[in-house]
Amino acid sequence: MTLRVKNGIMHLNLLNIEYRRNFDMNPLLPLDQFVPDGEARQHADGRLYLYGSLDVPGDDSYCSCRYRVFSSDSLTHWTDHGVSFSTSDGAAGEFEGNRLYAPDCVCKDGVYYLYFCLSNGREAVATSGSPAGPFSDPVAVIGADGDGIDPSVFIDDDGQAYYYWGQFSLCGARLKENMRELDMSTVNRALITEQEHGFHEGASVRKHNGIYYLLYTDISRGGASCISYAMSRSPLGPFTKGGVVIDNTGCDPKNWNDHGCIAEFNGSWYVFYHRATNNSCFSRRACAEPITFTADGRIPEVEMTTQGTQGPLSPLPVLEAGRACLLSGAAYIESRLEQGVYQEYLSHIQDGNWAAYKYFDFGQAAVSGFTMAAANGRFDSVYSARVELRLDSPDGTLIGTLDIPPTGGWTDWRDFSCPVQPVQGRHALYLVFHGDLGRLCSVKEFHFIA
Image (cartoon, rainbow, N blue to C red; front, side, top):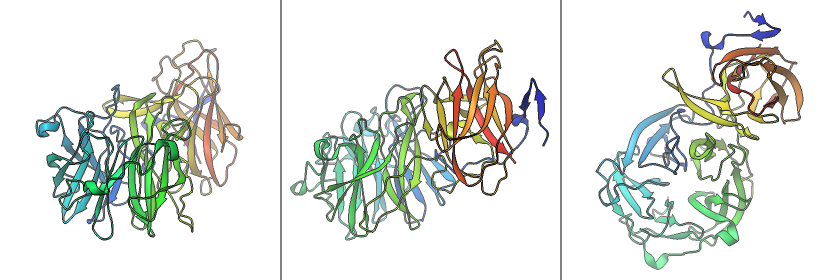
């Protein structure tokens, strides 16, 4: 591989050379799909199906009038099954015209039940013979309709189904055999509460080794950024708070909430959650991380990563800068169509900002250089941006420094390279930015050179 040198800076034309890229990582789905509030279920065909809301980038409200279902047999390659249900095509009857908030989907006796809530507070269920839908014939959930948001359904080992719903104070009850009506004699309107458990919304129930785990959006750390869990020996409680499973603080400057579940897939357990992007709380993406259980049934808190459900990444393939799992300062992940392809990049970077990528395995790669596709919208050569490559923290070991001189536009990409110090083992990479005059640069992608 030949690097060319201009003005003392090594350049490599990434855009004209094909590299094997990392794809099996966070966020999980294609970059033009924004699916928050994920409920993951492994159904009878062995595939894991991901149900969630559907955000529209650039919108100023949560969710949309459509649901879209994705599935995977590996958690690395996802199939887009298209729109599974809509309230904007005339087929939703009395529920037409309202935005669809967080859903859940379970199977009983060969029928798949899609439970959903709407922006006007209604709750309903539609059915299908397929886990991917399309779902049709929606009817109100009698006993919960008009009473809250974020339905969750759990079917116990004996076949009894339970329904959970609400905000601030969680309600729960048995579902009748028709799966459309609550047994009102079993209703508990305070399974967990904001005051005692930090419960905000987004309940989800699973069972593992005889313990019922109630996952929920937790505001105990100041915002609705945590997915926490409570534990019980009964599906209707009482529940005792266990702790935080994951906290998405730091994924975007305007991040507000988190919502997801834990799910078993082929014997392993994962937490599914979402991250905000685009400097907006209305453009959220599905992500996942592996979790474990301690001997006493607790779930240790896990961190957000770039690698997601798979092992550490190779440092050699090209990595999109939008895969950052943590951001600081004004920097955020911005989206745009570029030559007909949906792209994301790191944007609006200022002095002292950083972006983190966790984790890389340098054990099999004797890296000697680093290359970045970046842009600097300034025209005066005085205003170069400087990028420090640090390991494991913003103040960690410095392994290289890269300069990004003006390119004439904030998406006028050029390729810049620098040598790096030898690295061994598993490390997080922090890109730390420095410079003057506010906005410094944008970053599209990067990779290490062996």
